Length: 611
Image 1 (cartoon, helix red, strand yellow):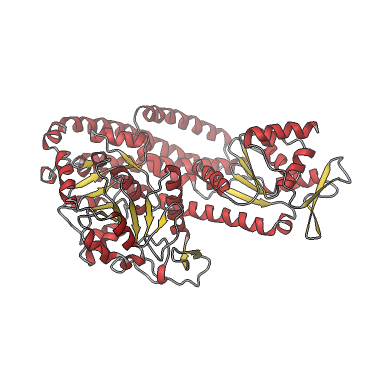
Image 2 (cartoon, one colour; image 1 turned 90 degrees about the vertical axis):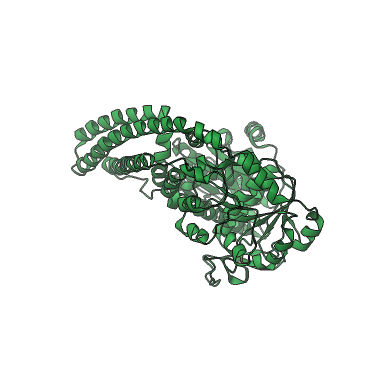
């Protein structure tokens, strides 16, 4: 029992105690060769060996050779006695990670009693999950997604686990698929818009300087808020909004403004963050002079430039880049948490400005009655629900079935994670036909109005007063010289980056040609030259966050570049590196020139925009 106690102590220290639940008969036997143990499980009268009865260690080594590749998250469903997990760990580089999911606690207890797996338990490159799919497994997946491990991963189901634990394995693999596809949706969005949001950030500088920061609205209200999303069931509740003008703050989330405009309902705020051209089209016929537009600088620059009403600016996220942008503007815009949809972001905006109850309408998160959006929305379309590869079926608030997809599920998950992490209990979901959102209270919209929207307030006047108090012409005039100096500093940095990246791009191109000719000596010479340029660029990066801003789209693309990870020769690996280098320096050169042009052409101070 010495090994068992050693491992039990280590496991308990890292994971906590486990229950000794014998929900199946588990038998450890001596393997017929190798002098180690094997294991079988008996369920419903059927016996399943989880390792070879003869050579379980050799079997593990062969399987590890087949499934291991460097720089990946390895998800192992079924640990057995730990042979495969131990062998995989012995192959690991610093970039690898192993998640072991063992559906049977009884098997894991036998493993602890039989095999010394202390290295697995104590390794900071291994996580072990026991039992059924639950919130704890969700938390593990979230953590792995957040640190980038779900960018490249592989799943391996150990021998006979699909037969012995069919239902559990099906749930686990479905959960992995859901997590992976939701993550892929988010990544595709980041890659697709990464360069566009750079352009928007720079072109929106003039408007941002003339905008009110969102922190001017922080905790200014105790009123109830209605977040209006663009879901297809919005029309079920839209008419009730007419009576709420002075009893609740009505906020249009993104393209929901088009449906509200069609039905001549004016919101108190509009929140928009989408930088795509399609979003601009939503706003072409929307222009209020007295409705504030809450926006991030990533919003399509034409929307911001052409909108005639007051503007309230915020950043989506925090970090060195956002500090750089605030420093450029000369004031703190404050930040809001970003989600997969503008409705997600709107919820955090609302939590910052009011302590009152919040109600969601039009938040279907699915294809209610087979449609994607509400009537009046440019994106409204009928879907083919027979395409089961795309659409999933979930339960709606009224107990019926709702077709959805992974894009909507990513939004749903964000809401649920946000509400749970913030311990928020005053969000109500009045979208009758929409998806259930854990953490919200399902309510009929009329009941929400009766319960929470009875006090009359001059909401428009309160908003106007905040805008006027925080939009000072005197401050803007005094800020002109400061901004000019900041632009000059950034232009000087850009000139250096253009010079260095141009030189590095040429060297990378030469390197690709040399590699194709298989000349080792020349490769090393070129690598030395690149190293010297990299050091110059690194010195800029240490002093100026502008480089991070410029290079981020390229880094996003490289991170998800579908290139071979296993190289058959040293030259293949060199070629892969050279191609990435050329792409990186070419993007750095192109973006530096483009940003230089933007900054040179900035006309920042528009006194007619000061309300």
